Length: 379
Image (cartoon, rainbow, N blue to C red; front, side, top):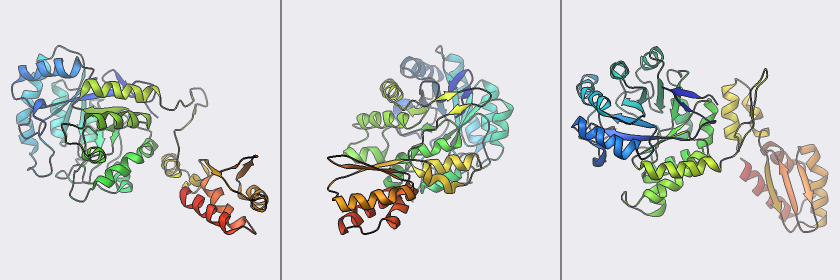
């Protein structure tokens, strides 16, 4: 996992989770407390409500990305950029400033004017965006989107999200964003839940991950909460996202989200990372799908993904004959049976456990059903 230097702010596994607060200079934006037209009032908000509360990054939006609203042109965004640049001049606190846009012209003008990074909500649908970011040595958050500047985030299936992030490649300072939220009519709450469940897969790119899950519908729906009541579910999900590998959390609730992110960071898995002539990094891989993404990244055959993780199942109620049948087959399957006085543990990769079903002979109906359950759970 690479570390991204965003104007001196290091983002990656070896650093605390970074909090991205939000300022909008777009009257269309739905979260009104973050919307300002007056630069001095906006700067006061940034200092008091974002930076003082723990924001490392301030993301400034020039327009609402709501799919129900008309998309502004690059020229329209540039007209609003003057207000955003005036805010930068008036802020007294220290933070990395990010411009949210889909256009390379706007990104270039913002970076020339003092912004530090770019939040590209259309994920390099503008093919000139990576060139601009590289020319300014700027970090860029890349949100998974179709190759269409009018449809940010309009990807539903998780595999398609993954492929969309590859659009027009990556810069050395790219941060990937899997695009949570209702960006298209086709995207359902279940799609967001699956994306969250598979969040570790996005580590397969080797780039830091940004998540924007603050009070999102797929979380509110679980607890049956309104947007106003949804802070607790957002905080719970924030800790889980960081534990699963997220490095930047975009939020309107800065202080509370910072605390939740730090808890997730404190209790996440600790993996070995040793630099050297031959460096060593233990990957955070818990499923075959996650392993497959890393294999894709290094150009290896993904067929070995099913051998790359280990699953452990406890089998209770095994009779002596079934134990003998299992014990005779596990070696050839590449699995392990650890049997004790009160039960047995079946250990192996998904591939090994799948092979086991074909190798066990003289199994009782109960053991056959148990092995079918194991096979389903590993695939």
